[in-house]
Length: 426
Image (cartoon, rainbow, N blue to C red; front, side, top):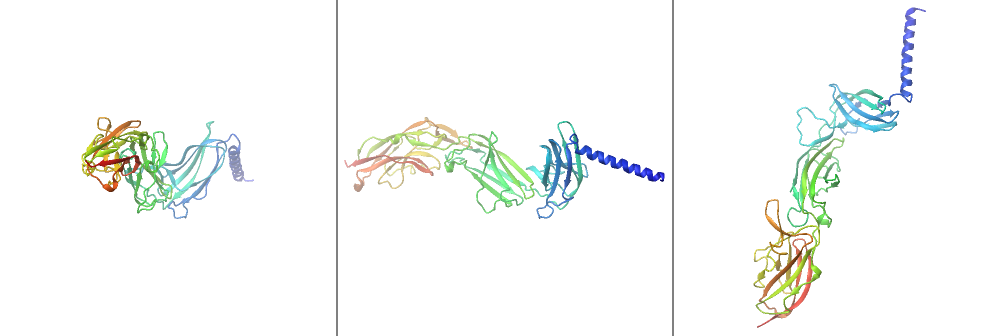
């Protein structure tokens, strides 16, 4: 047999032996943690057109290991799909659509945080690497071409929250927070999410306000947050919160923005005329003389309640004079005690604050304007007087009663302590 042929046969036997040895080494219990890895296709076009949008990557681990899956581009830059993830022994199949952990492009300046994004078009080496707790490690690689990638991010722009200091207590001042955010790209209907993150990390989803834009449609989206007060719920506890908005497109690219929101003096307002008791000064009054009353109001809720004048003790000099005519107009969210009668032409025309500046707590709003509050657990004695200078013969005597009014919200206590009062012609 020619010597050259013997050499060739010897080399072949050595190569076969090496391959067999490598295979035995891979399959033996003490071999490397990663047994095999492969992809279903070497071409990927991540653009959500339904054609080559995904590939399957399969791998087998001999024993529990820390796994990393990445792409390596021609310039040597790595893009991570899975990074240092703990995995048990076994066979795995994952779908990969070209979306990897966040990375930045040269000269890219974004106001939003990129969480995940698609890799650019190009030729890549896919890498599956594993390392076990014994210090054994190996990797398997292959080629992958990415083309026609839709790399346009679902950016979130013009994100705003106003006011940033928010007091959900139905006092008519900063009771709601308006959140605006604009999408630059259509995403699925559930792809845009806005939520509140509490100091303990709890997430509270916020509901989008209906508008011209469909959920997930590019354009401006608005969230009107009342902290559940309008549904009779207790708002989140006072404190510093993060408002976070995220957008995820059909490929899985994800972008996030966030800002701060502070909740102060929050709570569901609750108060009552104590025991429904109203004390009137008389059951009959000479025409032109005064009728007075006295009630006690208790704030038994968790929120301070705002009140406005005239102060307790104010005297209305005529039945024709009311809160509006003295300039104490109805204020949304304010609480007042009102007095009503059967012949009154408007609801509770005579109204009084739940105390006076000396007995109430002064709290300025975000613009520094002072407002006065009855604080949780406090009681206020409210007195008032009306000079009865009109007689309606068909309604004499007539009933007078008190009410506790949460203006522009509800009459909390209606027709309390009705008393029949006669006006006597002198």
